[in-house]
Length: 445
Image 1 (cartoon, helix red, strand yellow):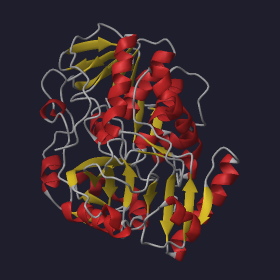
Image 2 (tube, helix red, strand yellow; image 1 turned 180 degrees about the horizontal axis):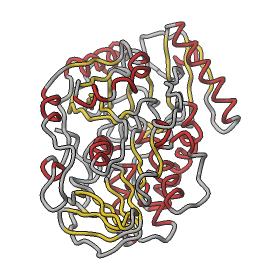
Image 3 (cartoon, helix red, strand yellow; image 1 turned 45 degrees about the vertical axis):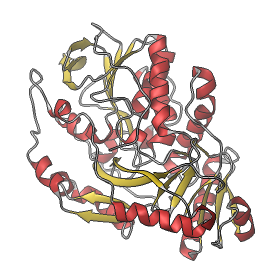
Protein backbone atom coordinates (compact mmCIF):
# COMPACT_ATOMS: atom_id res chain seq x y z
CA UNK A 1 0.00 0.00 0.00
CA UNK A 2 1.13 3.53 -0.72
CA UNK A 3 1.59 6.15 1.99
CA UNK A 4 -1.42 7.76 3.65
CA UNK A 5 -2.26 10.98 1.83
CA UNK A 6 -4.07 13.99 3.29
CA UNK A 7 -7.75 14.02 2.42
CA UNK A 8 -9.46 15.91 -0.36
CA UNK A 9 -13.19 15.24 -0.21
CA UNK A 10 -14.77 13.54 -3.22
CA UNK A 11 -16.83 15.64 -5.63
CA UNK A 12 -18.39 14.40 -8.89
CA UNK A 13 -20.72 17.34 -9.63
CA UNK A 14 -19.46 18.41 -13.04
CA UNK A 15 -19.71 21.97 -14.33
CA UNK A 16 -21.26 22.30 -17.77
CA UNK A 17 -18.28 24.29 -18.96
CA UNK A 18 -14.76 25.40 -17.99
CA UNK A 19 -12.14 27.44 -19.82
CA UNK A 20 -9.56 24.72 -19.15
CA UNK A 21 -9.83 21.14 -17.90
CA UNK A 22 -6.74 19.69 -16.20
CA UNK A 23 -6.49 15.89 -16.24
CA UNK A 24 -4.50 14.53 -13.31
CA UNK A 25 -4.42 15.41 -9.62
CA UNK A 26 -0.70 15.15 -8.90
CA UNK A 27 1.62 18.04 -8.15
CA UNK A 28 1.83 19.05 -11.83
CA UNK A 29 -1.95 19.04 -12.25
CA UNK A 30 -2.78 21.01 -9.11
CA UNK A 31 0.04 23.50 -9.79
CA UNK A 32 -1.23 24.04 -13.32
CA UNK A 33 -4.75 24.57 -12.00
CA UNK A 34 -3.42 27.04 -9.42
CA UNK A 35 -1.68 29.29 -11.91
CA UNK A 36 -4.47 29.06 -14.48
CA UNK A 37 -6.81 30.20 -11.72
CA UNK A 38 -4.44 33.07 -10.93
CA UNK A 39 -4.98 34.24 -14.52
CA UNK A 40 -8.73 34.44 -13.95
CA UNK A 41 -9.61 31.33 -15.96
CA UNK A 42 -12.40 28.93 -14.98
CA UNK A 43 -10.67 25.62 -14.27
CA UNK A 44 -11.87 22.09 -13.59
CA UNK A 45 -9.43 19.40 -12.49
CA UNK A 46 -10.35 15.73 -12.96
CA UNK A 47 -8.58 12.92 -11.09
CA UNK A 48 -9.57 9.29 -11.63
CA UNK A 49 -8.50 8.23 -8.14
CA UNK A 50 -7.56 10.59 -5.32
CA UNK A 51 -5.35 13.67 -5.27
CA UNK A 52 -1.64 12.75 -5.15
CA UNK A 53 -2.50 9.06 -5.15
CA UNK A 54 0.42 8.01 -7.32
CA UNK A 55 3.98 9.33 -7.62
CA UNK A 56 3.22 12.80 -6.23
CA UNK A 57 2.83 11.25 -2.76
CA UNK A 58 5.49 8.55 -3.17
CA UNK A 59 8.63 10.52 -4.02
CA UNK A 60 11.54 11.54 -1.79
CA UNK A 61 10.13 15.00 -1.07
CA UNK A 62 13.20 16.87 -2.29
CA UNK A 63 12.90 20.41 -3.65
CA UNK A 64 16.26 21.00 -5.25
CA UNK A 65 18.36 22.95 -7.67
CA UNK A 66 21.41 20.74 -7.03
CA UNK A 67 22.39 18.61 -10.00
CA UNK A 68 19.39 19.41 -12.12
CA UNK A 69 19.84 18.84 -15.83
CA UNK A 70 21.13 22.18 -17.19
CA UNK A 71 18.10 22.34 -19.51
CA UNK A 72 15.75 22.45 -16.51
CA UNK A 73 17.99 24.41 -14.15
CA UNK A 74 16.26 27.77 -14.60
CA UNK A 75 12.86 26.09 -14.18
CA UNK A 76 14.12 24.52 -10.94
CA UNK A 77 15.33 27.87 -9.64
CA UNK A 78 11.94 29.44 -10.36
CA UNK A 79 10.19 26.51 -8.72
CA UNK A 80 12.17 26.88 -5.51
CA UNK A 81 11.12 30.55 -5.39
CA UNK A 82 7.47 29.52 -5.71
CA UNK A 83 7.76 26.78 -3.06
CA UNK A 84 9.02 29.40 -0.61
CA UNK A 85 5.80 31.41 -1.00
CA UNK A 86 3.15 28.68 -1.40
CA UNK A 87 2.23 28.18 2.24
CA UNK A 88 1.95 31.89 2.96
CA UNK A 89 0.14 32.74 -0.28
CA UNK A 90 -2.45 29.98 -0.05
CA UNK A 91 -2.71 29.68 3.73
CA UNK A 92 -1.69 26.01 3.66
CA UNK A 93 0.91 23.66 5.14
CA UNK A 94 3.04 21.68 2.69
CA UNK A 95 5.82 20.85 5.15
CA UNK A 96 8.25 23.03 3.21
CA UNK A 97 11.58 23.32 5.03
CA UNK A 98 14.75 24.88 3.66
CA UNK A 99 17.08 22.18 4.99
CA UNK A 100 19.83 22.14 2.35
CA UNK A 101 20.73 19.20 0.11
CA UNK A 102 24.15 17.53 -0.03
CA UNK A 103 25.63 15.21 -2.68
CA UNK A 104 28.74 13.38 -1.45
CA UNK A 105 31.15 10.78 -2.75
CA UNK A 106 34.58 9.18 -2.38
CA UNK A 107 34.62 8.28 -6.06
CA UNK A 108 36.87 10.59 -8.10
CA UNK A 109 34.79 10.19 -11.26
CA UNK A 110 31.60 11.19 -9.40
CA UNK A 111 33.32 14.16 -7.79
CA UNK A 112 34.52 15.26 -11.23
CA UNK A 113 30.93 15.12 -12.48
CA UNK A 114 29.80 17.22 -9.51
CA UNK A 115 32.42 19.86 -10.33
CA UNK A 116 31.55 19.81 -14.02
CA UNK A 117 27.87 20.29 -13.22
CA UNK A 118 28.64 23.17 -10.88
CA UNK A 119 30.78 24.91 -13.48
CA UNK A 120 28.11 24.62 -16.18
CA UNK A 121 25.32 25.61 -13.79
CA UNK A 122 27.16 28.81 -12.89
CA UNK A 123 27.51 29.65 -16.57
CA UNK A 124 23.74 29.26 -17.02
CA UNK A 125 22.41 30.80 -13.81
CA UNK A 126 25.22 32.99 -12.47
CA UNK A 127 24.50 33.95 -8.86
CA UNK A 128 20.88 32.80 -8.96
CA UNK A 129 21.64 29.77 -6.79
CA UNK A 130 23.95 29.03 -3.88
CA UNK A 131 25.53 25.64 -4.58
CA UNK A 132 29.12 25.27 -3.44
CA UNK A 133 31.78 22.58 -3.38
CA UNK A 134 32.44 21.11 0.08
CA UNK A 135 35.38 19.15 1.48
CA UNK A 136 35.65 16.40 4.10
CA UNK A 137 35.60 18.81 7.04
CA UNK A 138 32.56 20.73 5.80
CA UNK A 139 30.68 17.48 5.14
CA UNK A 140 31.41 16.29 8.68
CA UNK A 141 29.80 19.47 9.97
CA UNK A 142 26.72 18.94 7.83
CA UNK A 143 26.40 15.26 8.82
CA UNK A 144 27.10 15.25 12.58
CA UNK A 145 27.55 11.80 14.05
CA UNK A 146 28.43 10.15 10.75
CA UNK A 147 31.09 7.44 10.84
CA UNK A 148 31.66 7.84 7.11
CA UNK A 149 34.33 10.20 5.86
CA UNK A 150 33.61 11.51 2.38
CA UNK A 151 36.25 12.99 0.10
CA UNK A 152 34.02 15.76 -1.20
CA UNK A 153 30.74 16.84 -2.70
CA UNK A 154 28.45 19.75 -3.45
CA UNK A 155 25.98 21.41 -1.12
CA UNK A 156 23.09 23.82 -1.70
CA UNK A 157 21.87 25.39 1.57
CA UNK A 158 18.91 26.97 -0.24
CA UNK A 159 17.53 23.59 -1.33
CA UNK A 160 14.62 22.22 0.62
CA UNK A 161 12.20 19.43 1.39
CA UNK A 162 8.42 19.26 1.59
CA UNK A 163 5.89 16.57 2.47
CA UNK A 164 4.60 14.71 -0.62
CA UNK A 165 1.59 13.35 1.27
CA UNK A 166 0.53 16.90 2.17
CA UNK A 167 1.53 19.24 -0.65
CA UNK A 168 -0.77 18.47 -3.59
CA UNK A 169 -3.82 17.84 -1.36
CA UNK A 170 -3.22 21.15 0.45
CA UNK A 171 -3.08 23.02 -2.87
CA UNK A 172 -6.20 21.23 -4.11
CA UNK A 173 -8.16 22.13 -0.97
CA UNK A 174 -7.06 25.76 -1.28
CA UNK A 175 -8.20 25.79 -4.91
CA UNK A 176 -11.63 24.49 -3.93
CA UNK A 177 -12.03 27.50 -1.66
CA UNK A 178 -11.35 29.70 -4.70
CA UNK A 179 -14.09 28.00 -6.67
CA UNK A 180 -11.90 25.72 -8.78
CA UNK A 181 -13.70 22.43 -9.42
CA UNK A 182 -11.62 19.53 -8.05
CA UNK A 183 -13.42 16.42 -9.30
CA UNK A 184 -12.65 13.05 -7.70
CA UNK A 185 -13.03 10.21 -8.44
CA UNK A 186 -13.63 11.35 -11.99
CA UNK A 187 -11.87 9.48 -14.78
CA UNK A 188 -11.58 11.27 -18.10
CA UNK A 189 -12.23 8.82 -20.91
CA UNK A 190 -11.14 11.10 -23.72
CA UNK A 191 -11.39 14.39 -25.54
CA UNK A 192 -13.86 15.68 -28.11
CA UNK A 193 -12.91 18.13 -30.84
CA UNK A 194 -14.83 20.52 -33.07
CA UNK A 195 -13.20 21.62 -36.30
CA UNK A 196 -10.06 19.86 -35.12
CA UNK A 197 -9.83 21.96 -31.92
CA UNK A 198 -10.46 20.72 -28.39
CA UNK A 199 -14.08 21.33 -27.44
CA UNK A 200 -14.85 19.02 -24.48
CA UNK A 201 -13.69 16.23 -22.23
CA UNK A 202 -15.78 13.13 -21.70
CA UNK A 203 -15.65 11.78 -18.16
CA UNK A 204 -17.25 8.79 -16.51
CA UNK A 205 -19.84 11.19 -15.06
CA UNK A 206 -20.57 13.23 -18.16
CA UNK A 207 -19.11 15.87 -20.46
CA UNK A 208 -17.44 19.20 -19.67
CA UNK A 209 -17.23 21.67 -22.55
CA UNK A 210 -13.93 23.56 -22.65
CA UNK A 211 -11.48 25.44 -24.86
CA UNK A 212 -8.30 23.73 -23.69
CA UNK A 213 -7.16 20.56 -21.92
CA UNK A 214 -3.95 19.95 -19.99
CA UNK A 215 -3.00 16.28 -19.66
CA UNK A 216 -0.90 15.91 -16.51
CA UNK A 217 -1.54 12.22 -16.01
CA UNK A 218 1.93 11.08 -14.95
CA UNK A 219 2.37 7.38 -15.71
CA UNK A 220 -0.89 7.32 -17.70
CA UNK A 221 -0.15 10.15 -20.10
CA UNK A 222 1.33 8.18 -23.01
CA UNK A 223 -1.58 5.74 -22.95
CA UNK A 224 -4.19 8.50 -22.82
CA UNK A 225 -2.59 10.52 -25.63
CA UNK A 226 -2.33 7.44 -27.84
CA UNK A 227 -6.10 7.36 -28.18
CA UNK A 228 -5.89 10.87 -29.64
CA UNK A 229 -3.26 9.86 -32.18
CA UNK A 230 -0.61 11.88 -30.30
CA UNK A 231 2.70 10.01 -30.04
CA UNK A 232 4.43 10.62 -26.72
CA UNK A 233 7.58 8.59 -25.91
CA UNK A 234 7.38 7.71 -22.24
CA UNK A 235 8.37 4.67 -20.20
CA UNK A 236 8.00 3.90 -16.49
CA UNK A 237 10.55 2.97 -13.87
CA UNK A 238 9.64 1.71 -10.41
CA UNK A 239 11.27 3.45 -7.46
CA UNK A 240 11.08 2.07 -3.92
CA UNK A 241 11.42 3.99 -0.66
CA UNK A 242 10.71 3.52 3.02
CA UNK A 243 9.99 5.71 6.00
CA UNK A 244 11.08 5.15 9.55
CA UNK A 245 9.30 5.78 12.80
CA UNK A 246 10.24 9.13 14.43
CA UNK A 247 13.84 9.25 15.68
CA UNK A 248 15.75 11.52 18.02
CA UNK A 249 18.82 13.18 16.58
CA UNK A 250 20.27 12.50 13.17
CA UNK A 251 21.11 14.88 10.31
CA UNK A 252 18.65 17.61 9.37
CA UNK A 253 19.94 18.29 5.86
CA UNK A 254 19.02 15.88 3.06
CA UNK A 255 21.82 13.92 1.40
CA UNK A 256 22.65 11.42 -1.32
CA UNK A 257 25.55 9.19 -2.19
CA UNK A 258 25.93 5.99 -4.20
CA UNK A 259 24.52 3.82 -1.39
CA UNK A 260 21.66 5.72 0.20
CA UNK A 261 19.59 8.90 0.09
CA UNK A 262 17.56 10.40 2.92
CA UNK A 263 15.57 13.33 4.18
CA UNK A 264 14.27 14.20 7.62
CA UNK A 265 10.46 14.12 7.68
CA UNK A 266 8.19 16.59 9.43
CA UNK A 267 7.06 13.74 11.74
CA UNK A 268 10.64 13.19 12.96
CA UNK A 269 11.31 10.04 10.94
CA UNK A 270 13.32 9.67 7.75
CA UNK A 271 12.47 8.85 4.17
CA UNK A 272 15.26 6.56 2.92
CA UNK A 273 16.08 5.16 -0.54
CA UNK A 274 18.92 3.11 -1.99
CA UNK A 275 20.80 5.83 -3.82
CA UNK A 276 19.49 6.42 -7.33
CA UNK A 277 18.66 2.81 -8.17
CA UNK A 278 15.39 2.01 -9.92
CA UNK A 279 13.70 -0.97 -11.57
CA UNK A 280 12.13 -1.17 -15.01
CA UNK A 281 9.77 -3.82 -16.32
CA UNK A 282 10.04 -4.93 -19.92
CA UNK A 283 6.75 -4.01 -21.57
CA UNK A 284 5.45 -3.80 -25.15
CA UNK A 285 6.23 -0.07 -25.11
CA UNK A 286 9.82 -0.82 -24.11
CA UNK A 287 10.21 -2.63 -27.44
CA UNK A 288 8.24 -0.06 -29.43
CA UNK A 289 10.41 2.77 -28.08
CA UNK A 290 13.71 0.92 -27.82
CA UNK A 291 15.68 3.03 -30.27
CA UNK A 292 14.55 6.29 -28.67
CA UNK A 293 15.88 5.11 -25.29
CA UNK A 294 19.29 3.74 -26.28
CA UNK A 295 21.18 6.75 -24.85
CA UNK A 296 19.12 6.62 -21.66
CA UNK A 297 19.92 2.94 -21.20
CA UNK A 298 23.63 3.58 -21.66
CA UNK A 299 23.60 6.35 -19.06
CA UNK A 300 21.78 4.22 -16.48
CA UNK A 301 23.89 1.07 -16.68
CA UNK A 302 24.43 -0.18 -13.14
CA UNK A 303 21.60 1.91 -11.65
CA UNK A 304 18.69 0.41 -13.61
CA UNK A 305 17.55 -3.17 -13.03
CA UNK A 306 15.41 -4.64 -15.84
CA UNK A 307 13.01 -7.55 -15.43
CA UNK A 308 10.15 -9.31 -17.19
CA UNK A 309 7.00 -9.65 -15.13
CA UNK A 310 3.23 -9.42 -15.06
CA UNK A 311 3.18 -5.90 -16.50
CA UNK A 312 4.23 -7.18 -19.92
CA UNK A 313 1.12 -9.32 -20.36
CA UNK A 314 -1.18 -6.80 -18.69
CA UNK A 315 -0.12 -4.03 -21.06
CA UNK A 316 -0.08 -6.34 -24.07
CA UNK A 317 -3.81 -6.94 -23.47
CA UNK A 318 -4.66 -3.26 -23.19
CA UNK A 319 -6.71 -1.76 -26.03
CA UNK A 320 -4.79 0.99 -27.78
CA UNK A 321 -7.98 2.68 -28.96
CA UNK A 322 -11.31 2.88 -27.17
CA UNK A 323 -14.75 4.44 -27.38
CA UNK A 324 -15.79 7.16 -24.95
CA UNK A 325 -19.30 5.89 -24.22
CA UNK A 326 -18.34 2.96 -22.00
CA UNK A 327 -15.99 2.29 -19.07
CA UNK A 328 -12.25 2.45 -19.70
CA UNK A 329 -9.07 1.25 -18.04
CA UNK A 330 -8.93 4.54 -16.13
CA UNK A 331 -12.01 3.49 -14.18
CA UNK A 332 -10.74 -0.08 -13.70
CA UNK A 333 -7.39 1.01 -12.22
CA UNK A 334 -7.90 4.06 -10.04
CA UNK A 335 -4.41 4.05 -8.52
CA UNK A 336 -1.15 2.40 -9.59
CA UNK A 337 0.28 0.81 -6.47
CA UNK A 338 3.31 -1.35 -7.33
CA UNK A 339 5.09 -3.47 -4.76
CA UNK A 340 8.36 -2.08 -3.38
CA UNK A 341 11.60 -3.95 -4.03
CA UNK A 342 12.20 -4.84 -0.40
CA UNK A 343 15.86 -5.99 -0.54
CA UNK A 344 16.90 -2.80 -2.31
CA UNK A 345 15.14 -0.34 -0.07
CA UNK A 346 16.13 -2.20 3.11
CA UNK A 347 19.75 -2.15 1.95
CA UNK A 348 19.49 1.63 1.75
CA UNK A 349 18.40 1.75 5.38
CA UNK A 350 21.25 -0.56 6.44
CA UNK A 351 23.80 1.69 4.77
CA UNK A 352 22.14 4.77 6.30
CA UNK A 353 22.34 3.30 9.81
CA UNK A 354 25.96 2.21 9.23
CA UNK A 355 26.79 5.81 8.47
CA UNK A 356 24.80 7.10 11.47
CA UNK A 357 25.10 4.47 14.23
CA UNK A 358 23.24 6.72 16.68
CA UNK A 359 20.15 5.84 14.60
CA UNK A 360 20.66 2.07 14.96
CA UNK A 361 17.26 1.74 16.61
CA UNK A 362 15.46 2.97 13.47
CA UNK A 363 12.26 1.03 12.85
CA UNK A 364 10.65 0.74 9.44
CA UNK A 365 7.16 2.24 9.52
CA UNK A 366 6.28 1.59 5.88
CA UNK A 367 7.72 0.68 2.48
CA UNK A 368 6.17 1.66 -0.84
CA UNK A 369 6.93 2.08 -4.53
CA UNK A 370 5.73 4.30 -7.34
CA UNK A 371 6.08 4.61 -11.09
CA UNK A 372 8.27 7.41 -12.44
CA UNK A 373 7.39 8.62 -15.95
CA UNK A 374 10.60 8.96 -17.95
CA UNK A 375 11.24 10.55 -21.35
CA UNK A 376 14.14 9.54 -23.63
CA UNK A 377 16.18 12.59 -22.56
CA UNK A 378 15.00 12.56 -18.92
CA UNK A 379 13.56 16.08 -19.03
CA UNK A 380 9.84 16.82 -19.11
CA UNK A 381 7.35 17.60 -21.81
CA UNK A 382 5.64 20.93 -21.05
CA UNK A 383 4.08 21.72 -24.37
CA UNK A 384 1.15 22.13 -26.65
CA UNK A 385 0.40 19.25 -29.03
CA UNK A 386 0.39 20.58 -32.59
CA UNK A 387 -1.72 17.68 -33.81
CA UNK A 388 -4.65 18.70 -31.58
CA UNK A 389 -5.00 22.48 -31.08
CA UNK A 390 -6.06 23.22 -27.53
CA UNK A 391 -4.33 20.11 -26.14
CA UNK A 392 -1.38 20.61 -23.78
CA UNK A 393 0.81 17.98 -22.13
CA UNK A 394 2.78 18.10 -18.88
CA UNK A 395 4.55 14.82 -18.19
CA UNK A 396 7.82 12.90 -18.28
CA UNK A 397 9.36 14.59 -15.25
CA UNK A 398 11.68 11.61 -14.79
CA UNK A 399 11.66 11.71 -11.01
CA UNK A 400 11.97 15.50 -10.75
CA UNK A 401 8.30 16.45 -10.83
CA UNK A 402 7.68 17.12 -7.14
CA UNK A 403 10.41 19.74 -6.82
CA UNK A 404 9.80 21.29 -10.23
CA UNK A 405 6.00 21.07 -9.91
CA UNK A 406 5.01 24.66 -9.09
CA UNK A 407 7.16 26.22 -11.83
CA UNK A 408 6.09 23.55 -14.34
CA UNK A 409 2.48 24.41 -13.55
CA UNK A 410 3.14 28.13 -13.93
CA UNK A 411 4.94 27.61 -17.23
CA UNK A 412 2.07 25.44 -18.49
CA UNK A 413 -0.45 28.10 -17.48
CA UNK A 414 1.57 30.67 -19.44
CA UNK A 415 1.53 28.45 -22.53
CA UNK A 416 -2.20 27.76 -22.30
CA UNK A 417 -3.01 31.45 -21.90
CA UNK A 418 -0.45 32.52 -24.54
CA UNK A 419 1.42 34.69 -22.03
CA UNK A 420 5.13 35.42 -21.77
CA UNK A 421 6.54 32.12 -20.45
CA UNK A 422 8.19 31.87 -17.06
CA UNK A 423 11.29 30.38 -18.73
CA UNK A 424 12.12 29.48 -22.32
CA UNK A 425 9.96 26.38 -23.04
CA UNK A 426 11.89 25.29 -26.15
CA UNK A 427 13.71 22.39 -24.46
CA UNK A 428 10.40 20.99 -23.21
CA UNK A 429 8.48 20.92 -26.50
CA UNK A 430 6.87 17.65 -27.52
CA UNK A 431 8.11 17.99 -31.10
CA UNK A 432 11.75 17.47 -30.09
CA UNK A 433 11.10 13.74 -30.33
CA UNK A 434 9.95 13.93 -33.95
CA UNK A 435 11.65 16.95 -35.58
CA UNK A 436 15.13 15.47 -35.92
CA UNK A 437 16.52 16.96 -32.70
CA UNK A 438 19.36 14.84 -31.30
CA UNK A 439 18.17 13.36 -28.04
CA UNK A 440 20.86 13.49 -25.36
CA UNK A 441 21.16 12.52 -21.70
CA UNK A 442 23.12 14.95 -19.55
CA UNK A 443 25.74 12.98 -17.64
CA UNK A 444 26.17 15.76 -15.09
CA UNK A 445 22.99 15.09 -13.19
